[in-house]
Amino acid sequence: MARQARAIQTRESILLAAAAVFDERGYSSATITEILQRAGVTKGALYFHFASKEELALGVVAAQLDVGELPPQRTRLQELVDHGMLFAHQLRHDPLTRAGVGLAMDHRREHGDDPAPFHGTPYQSWIDRIGQVLAEADRHGELLPHVVPDDTAQLLAGAFTGIQGMSQTLCERADLTHRVIVLLQHVLPSIAQPSLLPTLDLGADRAERLLAARVGSAAGTGRAGDGRPAAERPGTERSADLSSGAQRPTGEHGIPSPRRTPTAVR
Image (cartoon, rainbow, N blue to C red; front, top):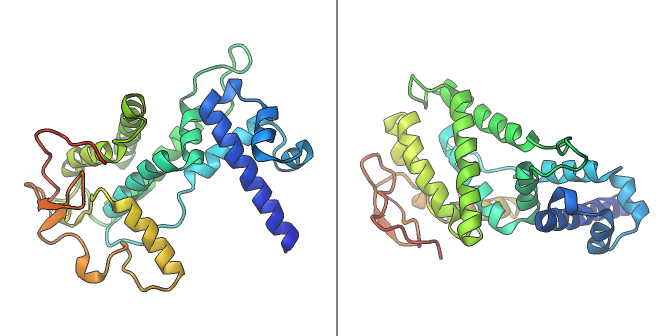
């Protein structure tokens, strides 16, 4: 068991080191030598887990797609919101996620005209995941009749890719959570049954509460599925403010009304 634990730790160390190097240099410029130096492992240890730089990059991509188990929610649309909010949080704080997204968007070539072998794989994985949640929401009667889950999944994946790229360029993703909330505020009323809109929690601290709920559940704290005590569950008369812990009235559809002048997340 101790040997297995060490092997898992070594693999994670290699993935984190590779993620940092891919994030900084891109796939083509990253070298195994630098990854070995960052990870502090031998070449034999690295090649025991990953046969090539290509396989290592695929490992980073697979790791960033695994957001872990999330607390179950009352609606599939809330689960869709939660995936987006947590992914935005990970892009700001998790090097594996940043590197995986960077690899997906890296158009540089490794050998002549051949694209990087993983290029495009994360996009399809994101679309598949969103599409699955939307299809479940449709079966539960949460979507409007005109909504095609696969089309909406592609729209959301593309829009998220665009706003995270813009956020990265403008402010190193400091305002990404706010941008995701604004995106959801505009998209959800066009796909969701109106009766569900007031129940959706788009609070700026949503990802932090989900992570706290995951830890609390493991520790047996008895927290509610969304990380709050039951009396504080969303969906009554208020929703969280976009830029702080303050509260403000909901808009026409129960989703927080956008500000005239957006305030960056602090």
